[in-house]
Image (tube, rainbow, N blue to C red; front, side, top):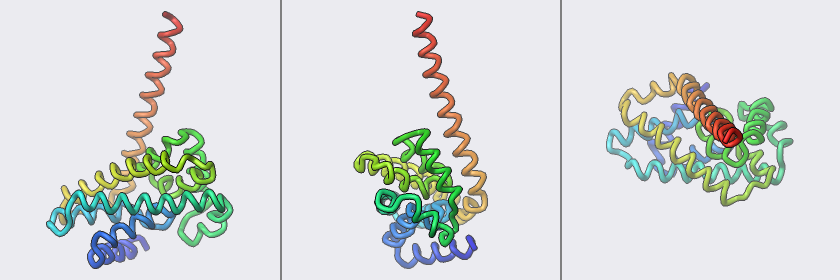
Length: 205
């Protein structure tokens, strides 16, 4: 199923260029089964071939991420959880994915919008609880843009470096996700440890 979809993604980008890239990344941010790991590395390969430009790829892909996230934000604000619970199955998503995203948002707050761009599954859903919570729209857009730009740049760079072997990223995308999640957890743990240590030092001072 995914292999078939990837062929469609490649065809869209090859024929529609930057607008096609924007379209796919809009869907990627709207709980649609369009993994960025199957889109951005191919764009990086086209940069490698000289058929696309690096800055333009990041600009249009990030624009798509922002548009899709804003649509999901307003869906969450207007309709909330019931819509996804009812129709999510048609997009290969389920209630468990939404539960995970909601817990993630509750735990990390508004910063989740930035962090979630690097977390599989969560990035597809996170705009919904943000909309339901009526998060400040300008802060939401800023975090979305920053996170999306970094993530899209990272995947594009990998596709550029691998060249004709760009599809290896899709093959090892699960391992890539595990590494990214481990780095995020490790970073969060380090920040938590430093904050606790500072508080402890203040008490003993």
